[in-house]
Figure 1 (cartoon, rainbow, N blue to C red):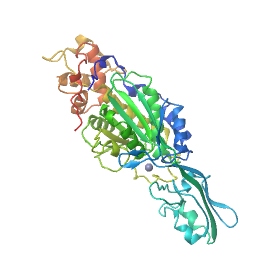
Figure 2: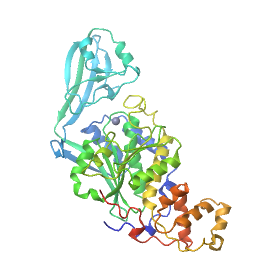
Figure 3: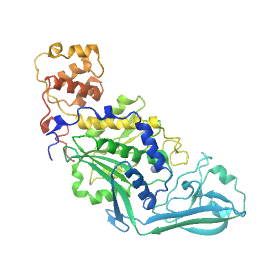
Length: 459
Ligand code: ZN
């Protein structure tokens, strides 16, 4: 393992979360709006076009994995091309129209051109009787079939009779696309930030995650960081598996990671732990979420969800957790046409962004400080600190944060340990430690052993 901290003292002195622009929520929402109309799938032009939209914000590299390539137990599928799809009544009116909403066609449907009565057609129509006004999202990647999705109320209103049914689609050899961006930090050790990008017009799941990560990558690109940051935008499951298959020899650089999905609604926040359960990213996320919102919840790892399943498959067991607002599958808008541009709000995107930055700040800044005054408390006023603290100037650390940090700065406690023991936020403790170091009361951070994850090894 390379030395992560050789230049730790010279990385950015402000927290990432303090540098978040005020308009961040509007900025991410604008990108969500650009992504929303595109008809994405597992592989094909919609996915490619989406990566180009992200590319306007961050100079990501698009990788193409040819159809038929074996990636572990899977094979890269054909691209799906969809040109048109509709159900047309005897009067020639389109009663279901892909051009109105791309959720109307079951994603990855095989082509069909037929005339049939409503009874036969019903076997290919999916609705949600409990939510009669929304269109469900259905896909059939690995089972050949075709179908339409529509509001249950609209189906009930269809009169008996014969209908023209057309899905003008094809499955062609091509490639599966994914986007990747590496921000180089002082160390080659990496933080992986990954989002799936394969759903059609659904805003929270799944335009919000890719949009947030593109903006975050652009912000990190302007900073000097301790870790390198690898961003991935890849179709769910197969994209992550393809990336892992192509980068198997390099994955031991990944020291921490987050999958980011459904970050634009007002629920949660929710964090699902990595398979390891007690990785630093798990502790960091649990800490930041607890201090950010009383409604936060931290869940144990499970092999259902998003691509944390692939990063956490036993052959990799990478410390990668899942950050969300509402947990997938639990909100009524999930995988329906109600997951639209009104459902994701700039203020929720902004608070998600800040929480993720808060987690990254822990990874960037955590270390085991060593106090240079070990016998008795230092006289803070003599060092110009006590007065600052009690006057409570903007950004000045409180007396309490200084005392906790000094007391536990014995080289065995990390800043996160101190924050948890003191029941104070990591940001407050990190700020106190910075101030103490500036005033010569803490030793400079210089050696690998100062890092709490220095001895972290993959088990
Ligand atoms: Zn989904």
